[in-house]
Image 1 (cartoon, rainbow, N blue to C red):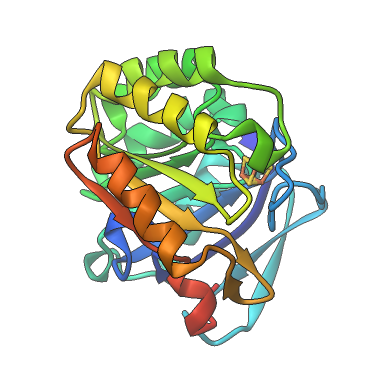
Image 2: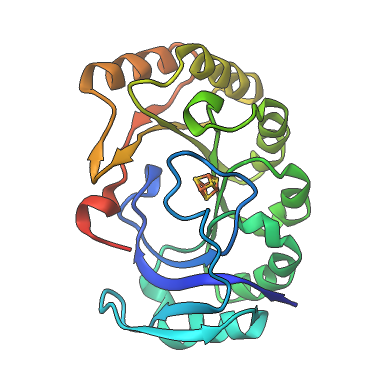
Length: 245
Ligand code: SF4
């Protein structure tokens, strides 16, 4: 089994409640969505996977795509000291597009003792279902259609939440000052209907390295969120500020 991988590197998590935790990132190529604010999903560069062999050194080894499960394990095991890392992050793009590959990769990753952290757009519940027993943490997006510029995904998100809650789950919603309040409220209802203890992260959209959610708006959204959910935080993309990958 092989997969198209864009890059593998070691850095700190820059989003959500695990911000600052050191992770090995495996970034899968391609996405089934095309969000307006995307910085990774659209461009398809399938020829090579870049591997940063010295964390933070910005020297990249180029490997030919697609990579086998063993290729990925070799990169992870031979270049990064896993004991320094909180977890291995499967990110993208959308990693669940390559679910058959994950089915083979995850048992071996688990054998290393690493936690498996899945970053996903939350739209492919059927792909997650057979994998959920091997995933420790799910970082799931809920897409507000008006903000992301996509079709409504409420049904997909609902099914995804019901599967993903078997792991440690949190939800992230990217928002800016123009985001629809009614769509945000719909997302709150969706989450609360599954479990009002699922943490929600409101992530201000980053434009030109700056947050595009004003302070008052951010606090107002958090207050609205806390009316339905127990844990609602506002956390920007910290890795962008630090110049981390
Ligand atoms: S789901 Fe993520 S990777 Fe895919 S287009 Fe949207 S922001 Fe980009």
